[in-house]
Length: 253
Image (cartoon, rainbow, N blue to C red):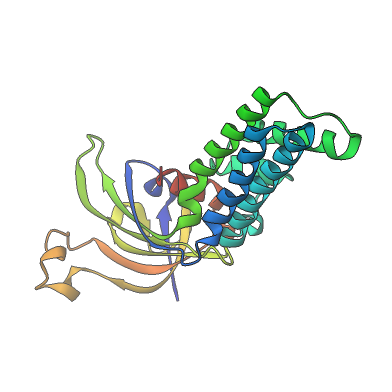
């Protein structure tokens, strides 16, 4: 493979992201958490005894845990390596702008007090509030466990926000998080085909072409003779991948 270097800023500034994904076949990732949540809701609503409220809180924690385990099984976020990586999983998901952990921690702390210190459950009104909190948590993460987005198309805009002829596609590998595929059109001024530079990222390219290869195809006619079509791989260890994937996931909202 040939090495070619791309300006990091080019993938962060003036970029408009679009995505296309396929549905996750197993509905268990989404629906099971709601089944457990519904059991919690019924127990809290009935409130025939303190045991109902206690069991309701326990099932809320089970619902949260099921969703967290589903997210990790699909995306393998724990495999992403970076400096100052949070130890807690909730904090890790917060780092990727997926959740805010404060309310979830409150529910888990209440459940732990009940389980390990035999503390009484909160009032029915407070339990109803916790039921609603978990419902909103599930809703906010439904898209992650319903649609697996692996391909992110990007278009580069100029400083005025106008679309340029440049852009391409990033393909993520959630199973290993070792590399990302990238292909598309880039202007020569954001590339260096000879040597590494500060602020540039290495692409191991399988294919480098100019528009001469596609003289009769409409999509390529607006490219300059110096523009390059790149098809290659970027290794995640070579750049701030955790920040980059956070940006991509944010584009899904």
